[in-house]
Length: 115
Length: 111
Image (cartoon, rainbow over all chains, first blue to last red; front, side, top):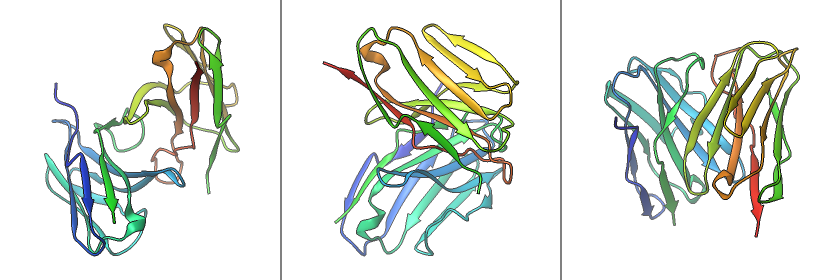
């Protein structure tokens, strides 16, 4: 079975550019989570969706960050404009439960570097 | 807010030695999940504990949930190089039922 698929795996771009990260969750999972991981702050939950609807975006650091889930098989996380402090590994995870009662399955992540 | 403390932050062991990481909370937890992240990899689910005093084993790994459901531990017997990585406990937050991610414990095998 295919796991969570993220693209790109690596992204290097200059400050001020728009960055779009993509995620395909596991088929049949109804919940999708976007995380950011850095050495300083660890793993942070940015936003999560249930049945394609955003439930809580309180973890999104700034208005420069936005996320969408137009259908059950696709989600994007966009940063516009990007800044060097956005450099991190961004993970997408999916689960068949919203409530932390089932495992979350993570993608390989996108390693983002903003110069 | 609800927080979890995981100790130690790092543990260096010789291959073949045992390893233990502890997860502590000031509040009662409804459940707790454990994940492993290899260097350069992504978190991978290991197990979920739900019941007070629960003990689960996966080969050389033993997971425990405290009687008061405020702490949990992961013990690895006779570590191997494949055990290298960071182990995270992730209990469920009461307010929004999302996972609380601690800093993790990094297991390092001494050469």
